[in-house]
Amino acid sequence: MTVNANRRGFLGLAGAAGLGVALSGCSGGDQPATTGGGAAAAGGTFTFWSMWKEGEPQQKVIARALADYEQANNVKVEVEWQGRNNLQKLVPALNTNSVPDLVDGAYARAYAAMVATDQALGLSDAWATDIDGKKLSEYVPEKYLKNIPIMTKDNKPWMVPYQIQSDAVWFNAAAYPEIKANPPQTWDEWMSLMGKLKGQGKVPLAADGDIGGYNASFLSTLILRNGGPGSQYKICEDPSGQKWKDSIAVDAAKRLEQLVKSGYLIDGYGASKWPEQQQRWANNAAVFMFMGSWLPTESGSYAANGFEYSSFTFPKTGTHASQRADFSGFMVPAKAKNAASAQKFAASLVKKVYQDAWGTEAKGIPLRADSPTSPQLKTNQEALTKATAYHQSNDGVAFTGYNEKVLWPACDALFLGKINADAFINQMVTTQAEYWKSQGK
Image (cartoon, rainbow, N blue to C red; front, side):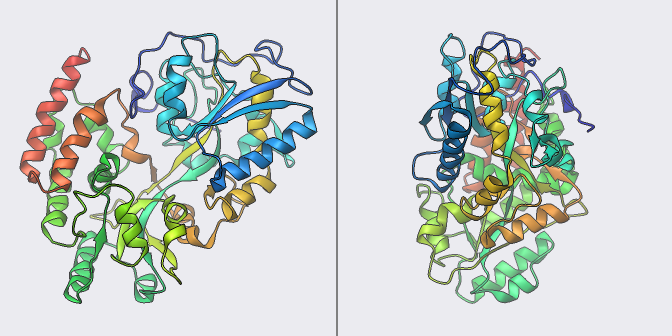
């Protein structure tokens, strides 16, 4: 498997929401099963801090896998269902001798919390584990690895992924079968369609404007549509900030300004609190919503009767049409005392029985290509399969504090109509230069 472990100098500066904290260095290399303290084959315990909350469908699948693992291996797993801030809680623990043996989470948060500071254990043992007659590594799609640096600087995997996250423009196919049959392919086609819908008295687009990452996803995807994967990263890593004046960024900002001024966005999107607007969308108050592949799961409990989830890839502005692909999965801290057993369990979630459940019960996109997914995610999974190029959320931009202090505030102002495209570009040039100066560049 050919993997670029240090794509675009990714190592060393990663950070994400609230996780850009300086940590003491620790080896990120593999440790043999005889170090790390725990019995791998039978007996013993290990601790697990999970990103899922008790009662969530994802939690139920993992809990079932844990119960099976405990019974088969005479192991006791001490699990805390902490929710999405589990990695934020992990950061201070990593400076102590009391760390969990296993955590899970989304790629960007995991990278920031563990990998950027060499606090993640290399998981070569897990990747070499036999899963249903094949090595686990054979289930990890190589096409995604070209744009997802999942290897340590020693070229060892630091995550055991169990699901793929993507995004799409979502709509109710039961109400709009004509859109399902002929979705817009270009930005201009999408804008024209939304204009027609507005003329029919419908609200074209819902958005929860209080979520900075969601607002920035419009700008980020437009840049990637103009310049292809890697183009936003190159702009954001420029110490002078002047690359924001490049045509691909200026055009993206102007298109977003066009959307904001169109009147196509749902009333109150800038003043509501998540998940108000996605709830309204799921009750047919708006036609479209641009969101991650988790939207059907999050909104399913309050969707209108007969709601049929369908989606199309964010429209093109030129020739680029990459599909977002991010991993969520398991990580083992380098200080873990029971690393071998934790790795063994992490690998077990790639078994088909659990991957099938992940797709059909948890309604996520499973890692394994041979596992089914829920009907709600069929169109999004098909888009991943058909795509020939991929990008990460925010194009992999996760410099410590950058999104929170530089990118998201400016994108919020543009998306909420407080500034225009020219002012946005000028703000990015200035604040990015200040940011990189503060970083010693």
